[in-house]
Length: 373
Image (cartoon, rainbow, N blue to C red; front, side):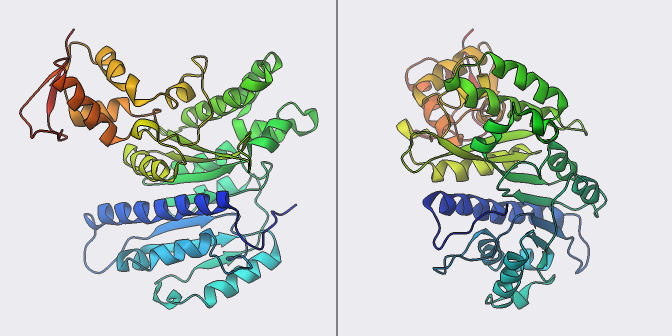
């Protein structure tokens, strides 16, 4: 069943669209800047944006949905307009036709070097092979599927194999949670998690308390994404949780996967700003409550008070720059660069570390920190 489109966007939809469109603009700008180094003459190496479940383009009240927000962000950069190849798709033919018309009417669309393309096909498992066969260009894939049968871990890896490529996707926790132990749809869950991780997950859930299911499922899926790398490069996984209208339980997650720390860093900054709560300046990312049984999600819930002690333990006896501390420690935590600068300054003021000379109340990337043994 295709996803229903509402007369006006729900608040969660607005936040989701903001995260995706802002990250798209950041990603496209960074990749374009890197590509310029290897270009000669007037030729611009292309980049790609693919949205497999795009919807009709706008809500009945005129609010722009993600596809048109991406176009809007593209218009801010002449370099992006010269590089970007956009493919939108929706299996619903009415949605696809509505989106085509919305793009045709969109002010400034003629400025794109490559006309945005709207397709109308059913997403199936074989799509991963088709993506692998595409020209090797940096690609940002957005998968906003209503369910789970259409998507697989192989689909994401087919994109992430390409340099400069990232994936953002809608993880419909409620539907996936209900499906995992359903014997009639074993294959769909195996495709989504990968066979080994799906089997492991079913075994873990057999003796799992209901309150822990979300932690177990998201932890296993994050691990599956990281281990799916076929080229030896790491995969950085960052989930952002959405709750239902009354805030009593999770409805879904928006998950970002990148093969580069810089992409992870930029998305973390965007998600941090969209978080509904930031105790002590550490953004919540709307993550689930975590326990020590689930290390990735546990670390994502820890407040700034604990960061100093974590750094003192992890880097005991080392001399290391602020930049290296941040890049080595921040993965799978809720902390962003300014949190590290703040806590290192506090540790230095308290005499618990020493550092090379720097301006008062600041901590540049190049400052070298000495941690006691």
